Length: 270
Image (cartoon, rainbow, N blue to C red; front, side, top):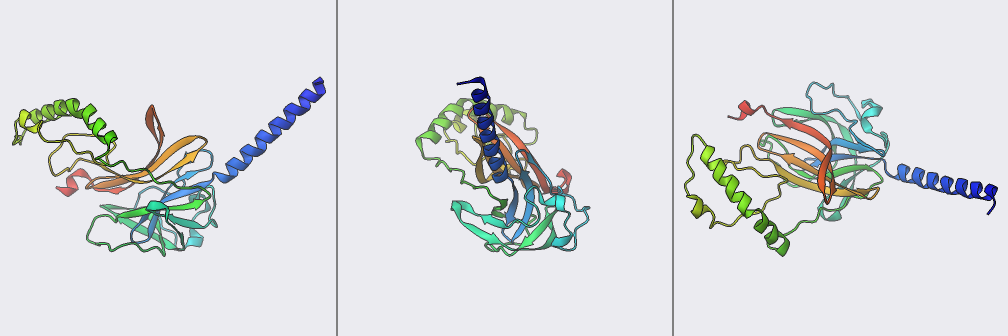
């Protein structure tokens, strides 16, 4: 091949890569919102080649737009204000969403700018400090996949319990010895005979049985972008909640988005 032919082939190859990259970038522009059971959605993450946040974070002081048309364009994220929104529910069910109006969603002692939609889930109790989430609301062309649930009765779960048992017993004993106003009703040797039960948490801590300082994870789904896997989920406790996206690799998990939904000061719930 002549030098001119080599240059031409290289130019064609680069053009092909550039075109493929442009198509990929065009496909991968979307925004995510937590979809509450009452139909209110709270946008919390956008992607346009990089993860970010365009919608305002939790703050009852944010001036609420009067109508959808009054929402600043930059709030909508890379897909813009005219993109349709879709509800992604567990099991892969999807439903088109009709957006109604901006609202302040009350979440514990604070609130979050949000949008009411025509979605309605199961019954809700307005006395609760927050509303349960049924899934995600998505604008843009991205496929949400379920996060696979592993039964605690499977061999994998049993192996995980076997791996953590010694360290769990050590940490439980250490924590029990440092409680100041409470004495554990069972001796260490008695506690060892009780099986460990796995729950859907991404961390562990020893605490009182009221679980006042424990956070729980609600998985919304996962996406695959450029050969990387990302989990989308909510972390909540008795007094606050946040919405997050994390990159998941075999060697570790790294949060890329974490947005506070709302909460109460610690002393406010005593």
